[in-house]
Length: 121
Length: 315
Image 1 (cartoon, chains in turn yellow, cyan):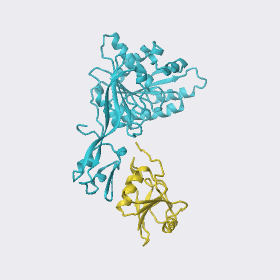
Image 2: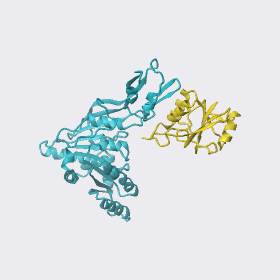
Image 3: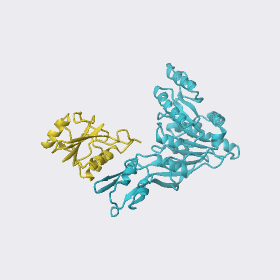
Image 4: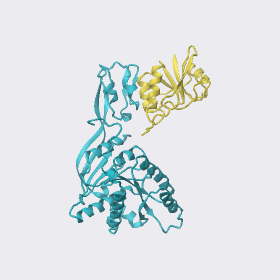
């Protein structure tokens, strides 16, 4: 199963980024094989719709789940429509720890938007 | 003569100044047998329009406005993703076997519908606000817009207000812009011959005056300043000196200095115009209009309005 994790840098050793749509980069990890791929966030500086674009990236890469902290209302709707489950890091600070806890079913699943959303004008 | 009144900082007195200018122009027209015609006043501060409280127009005309947003025909959509790819605003997203539309992000450009290979997108009106218009007792033609509560996008409503009511040849236009220096202000000021910047001698007033002056420079519109709440007898003259020095250094002419007076504040709170509170200000405002007329380049006065970048024929 593939998961998308929001990270502060495009590397497996990077620290996590709490923002979903505005994360510095995305890490797509296959939880079975451990294979990973780092993606730049093209919406980092866009004026709006960053969460929607991030959801599309997760969908296009075949992710069944995403792990971050702040999911805005648009991102939530898009991920929900794509049937992609949302989880929060909780106390996990690294990608390694996040994956360990995710596999152990210890991460909190998100059932509603966790941030109020923004409008870039 | 098209004048937009802006400020940067909110609450500096944009509406107070814009209204007084319109009233003085209407009074001049009345004294001169209606020549030129009394001005057209457009309140483009559509998130909080308030000029009607002072000008008291009889708002008889009304129009609902919005943007055309995509509606997906799921029976035709193949989820190819072309619509999402061409949308600059991520207002359309294709997620697996679903195509989602986010109306609040849509700017109504129509690219998705034009590029859909299946003809599965129909454009429907997403109402954003209401326009109203009428005549004031002083004979001023008046229009304003009102953005629906919760809608984030003001620009389309401002653009449609300005297109709905346009000045007649020889009729002056006074536009009251919103505070700030972002898209709404730019849209309000678009096509203007002059930007009248209302500021106050405070650090915040000066900070935002600089931003508003930058908008004028960027749009290549000549600008001048009215300093409101001007307290020449203040013990601390530093804020006054700073704003005066800034205007001098930037060659921004200070067209008037409105005194900081309790009776003005009390009158405004009762819905009176500055001219009603101080009838002797009529000549002050007539003088502002004269100075502006002299500063507008003759060539610019005949330049047609530049349309918005998202404008399509027939919209």
